[in-house]
Amino acid sequence: MKEYFPNIPKIAYEGPKSRNPYAFRYYNPDEIIAGKPMREHLRFAMAYWHTLCADGTDMFGRGTANKSFGESDPMEHAYAKAYAAFELMDKLSIDYYCFHDRDIAPEGKTLAETNANLDKVADLLEELQKKYNKKLLWGTANCFNHPRYMHGAGTSPYADVFAFAAAQIKKAIEITARLGGTNYLFWGGREGYETLLNTDMGLELDNLARLLTMARDYGRKMGIKGDFYIEPKPKEPTKHQYDFDAATCVAFLQKYNLMDDFRLNIEGNHATLAGHTFQHELAVARINGVFGSIDANQGDYLLGWDTDQFPTNVYENTLVMMEVLRAGGFKTGGLNFDAKCRRGSYTPEDIVLAHIAGMDGYAQGLRMAVKLQEDGLLDNFIKERYASYESGIGADIVSGKATLESLEAYALSKGEVVDSVGSGRQEYLEMQMNAIMFE
Ligand code: XLS
Ligand code: NI
Ligand code: NI
Image (cartoon, rainbow, N blue to C red; front, side):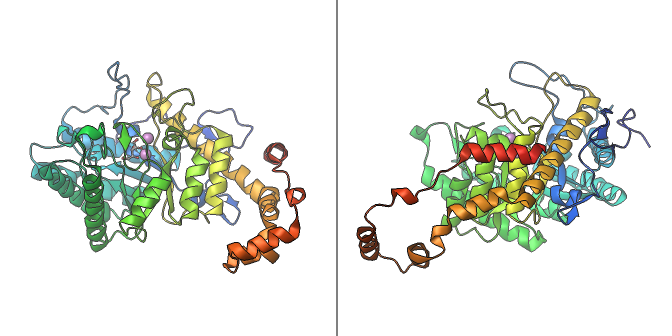
């Protein structure tokens, strides 16, 4: 069988001292950490669009990477990408993958032709999944590339476009379900606005909820057993994206009664674009019961756009994995590398090295987060900081027994309370965190 990455061996774990670039230093898939194998903690997924499709094209220049995989006919190219994808997942020990409908198969002249192309490629994907023992983490529909979606898909002012998006999503759900995909995702590509001068925001949001509700119902009928995800992002491509951040998404899901079936897919670079830390977005999802999955990448703090870099910032990855552990780990979600090589890193080897860097980066984050959890210093500090709510007046506040009158009587009896206010000890915690991480 043709090899698409002939120079790349199967990547093995060699431990932290190894200087072999084609080896893992920290990711040891079957090593048991905190009660389960690393591969189950991390549930890595490969993003089809970046890894098999994106060629480095940007606003100022054409592609730099050749992702033709030796084919020029669109269908042959699609098949070659599928073979290349599974060869890579196999060599990298990545157990899951994610795709948009348009990543895996080319568009035909009509929707019917496009759907037939999808069916053909899905046959091959099904076969390759079995052969390599890989799973689809989630599928999604690309409702943002085609010109018809210029003003949005579910939020388009034009009902015909809404109908087209619905038809496209229906097919993407069928393909996802057929391939045993656990979850189904919506990223609100062009679901937002450029100016309120031409926008009926109320109707657009109601329509978006209508589309998600229909998709949820059809997805359940088709056998999607896991979660439906929405993926917060504040801007880009539109100036204002409706799924702005985790808190905005929670309010949307609550308003439209979608909390039971939808969870959030949190992406690192989207968090920072929204002016939040990655950790913050995960914490908001967790405390609202909608932590679902992660698009693992990182942005550049000096740039204001979605650079989708491979996540090598171990400190940030540690904070992310702390939140994942606090949420009880992934249930049906995972860590999808929604990340691409820099335009200048254009060779096939770069794709492999980038994934190793991201996987090792998250493996380090997991190892450090487990150390921090087992040490207990941070969790205990937080617990003690709020201990006054466990008894006395604090317990009355928490139980709902306290009223403004009873609290006034309490305050009057106390005189002053400033001496009972403890230090936040931020620098101490940062020092201890470094000590535990690097001991
Ligand atoms: C774009 C998004 C996209 C989604 C899938 O910014 O991250 O890649 O994850 O549509
Ligand atoms: Ni994403
Ligand atoms: Ni992104």
